[in-house]
Image (cartoon, rainbow, N blue to C red; front, side, top):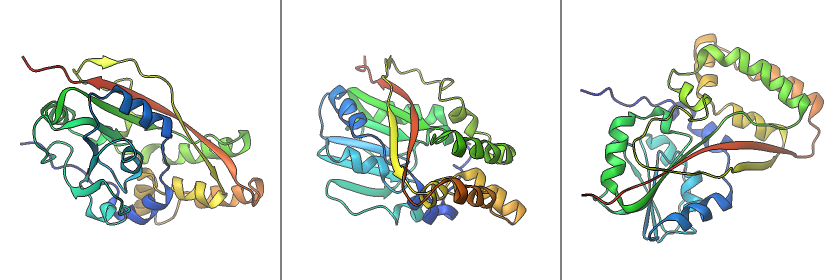
Length: 250
């Protein structure tokens, strides 16, 4: 029997909704252009709906699932998007129904063998599976240097499966045929409090705080107060993107 999925983010639901970034519009346009049709997209492990919102501009219907009711409760109410509880490995979607499956910043938490079986079942022939993630925010040399100290503090507190993400999904082992993925990056204009909210949405920050009884971002907050004035700064995240295509069943 497989282990139940771990829920790292329900206790962080408010911080998660506040601190997670939006993905670039041209990523969704690129993925939509790869798809055989635009009837249904499944955004798997949607969190609070960051990717689902972008997909809704290109697909007639978006089904956005997550194992966390707390996260889903904070997702926006938007036309074309149906938010519902569901596992990556057992979506409840009909077979051969999805033109696109997306997984943003989450595939490292999955039972990959069972998820691939589910993706193969749900995708239409020629349908697309797109998996992406991001690592460390880049701002400027001073801010980035301060972040390095936080990263060192958090290193022992990341869940084991985070290693796949920290390797930029290079070791992601799916057997679907893979397509070449161009480079994309997410960007935002953030103030210091936005940046800190992002850091506080990380699972390692949660586990450090629960074990140590203190917020590991507080020392960084003091340093940012000295180097981040009231104006917003540009924040950049290069995306690690893998794209796969469902083949017709024999």
